[in-house]
Image (tube, rainbow over all chains, first blue to last red; front, side, top):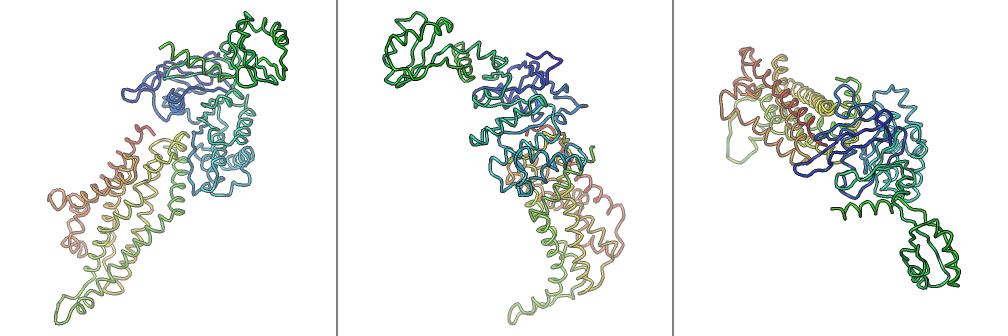
Amino acid sequence: MATHDDAAIRCSALRKTYGSFVALKGLDLNVPRHSIFGLLGPNGAGKSTTIKLLTRQVGPTSGQAWVAGAPISGQTTDVRSRIGYLSEQPAFYNWMRGEEFLDFVGELFKLKPSIYRNRRAELLELVGLKDAGKRKIGGYSNGMRQRLGIAQALMNSPEVLFLDEPVSALDPLGRKEILELFASLRGQTTIFFSSHILADVDRVCDEVAVLDHGTLLTQAPTITLKEQYARPVIAVELGVDAQALSSLAEQEPYVQKVEISGERANIFVSDLEIATRQLPTALARTGLPLLRYEVAIPTLEDVFVQLIHEQTEGK
Amino acid sequence: MSGKIFWALLKKELREQFRSYRLLIAVIVFLILGISGPIITSLTPALLSNLGQGVTITLPPMTATDALQSYLKNMLQLAPLVFILLTMGCVADERNRGTAITVLTKPVPRNHFVLAKFCAYELTLLLSIVLAAAGTYYYTDLLFSALPFASFLLINLALFLLLSGSLAFTVLASVCFRNAIAAGGLAFVGTIALLLLPSFNATIAEALPSVLFNAERVKQLLAGTANAPDTVKPLLIGAGLVVIFVGAACVIWRYQEI
């Protein structure tokens, strides 16, 4: 976890209420500089509120936060000059051309014309809109709008890039390309993004935080979380119905549970080390045709489901 | 005030007005209103004489003053409505579409966002009034006689300030509502109040720029016999109202969650 000094984002008891509704209940968060940080949570968890607070779209009810060293409610230093922001559904002036919009954004950052024109060309190339730059934004597809949104968010070479559900509107190929683009920015800028598509977060994030009902459930490097929360599972696939494996739980003491789906089975074990040594023999004893055997790699989704489940049970 | 950012926003607003034909619509409507005043005044006797058989309507000869009154009547009835329709969504629509968020997550002072919009429409209003006034002046001279230029300028300044007040109030309404129709409704009520209040209270009537459009006051202004303090006071109050409405819009916008 980042210390205060090397944190790109630091939140201290950050709280936001809308009337009697508490959207964020005193958030404490440290985001390491130059990391790709994922903010996860179910709908209504407070993800968008957190991003709105950190990008100065709304003011906090109490608490404070610092982005790239500048307080979000500071009067002398404007945190917005150090950040880039892309909303879930980026909105543009449809009458403008792509190039024209990026120039406008460059002017808002008070960049010199020669600088923002060069930057515009670089960014259009980077997001794959080089040929569409002269077209009106009104004629862009959702994917193109998202790409333009990313380009405008990078115009000022931000220290921190905020992305609110950045790939939710894209098709699988577009998502892959954009996530690769984010990954290519690793080390150059801090990327803070919220998403409910856990596979995407799993793919690129170094560290994640999980929010639920305005409360931070956990924050840790992705690998640590997976190790901490994921249950050891061995996935097998047979050439016949896997129902015959249901008795493994009674026969082998280290097997806790067997989930069967047609010819596939997930075998939940108490000790992975013992299981990896003894389970192949136990499977061989059954005499069933084994097509696939692998230790299932835990996903962020497993972690997320467990965390939310624990939180719900704890209430 | 950051001049570069304000200039960028102002340029964007002017380009938007140009490309969405708002500028063209305003200019054409105002030009028609300006030209039609003296032309209709000039044609009125002929039109009335053809009204009906056996009916004789005798009118005093039409003058340049009548043409000016007709121009003012046209402008006061239609020009505010045109500008309410053009500007009622200027802030409300940007909030609705989300473009306000795109702009305001950049280092843009909030008051610049509102001021740039007001100034851009104010420039359009100025251009439209200049063209309308030029049309009226030219055709009045052509069909009747030349109006005293300084007095005509002063009357148009009062008209500009009155319409600016309506424009500023529309921007304020657009800041207050997310819905452009609601903003337009409030702006319409506000403008009607601004135009009708003088009819109910003499003190208010003397204070607002619309007092300069009274038939009596127009005659005095054209004759150069109008009292200077009575002329300057409504102009200053008109300008003050504009500042108050725009200031209120900036303050409210500053504290609103987008």
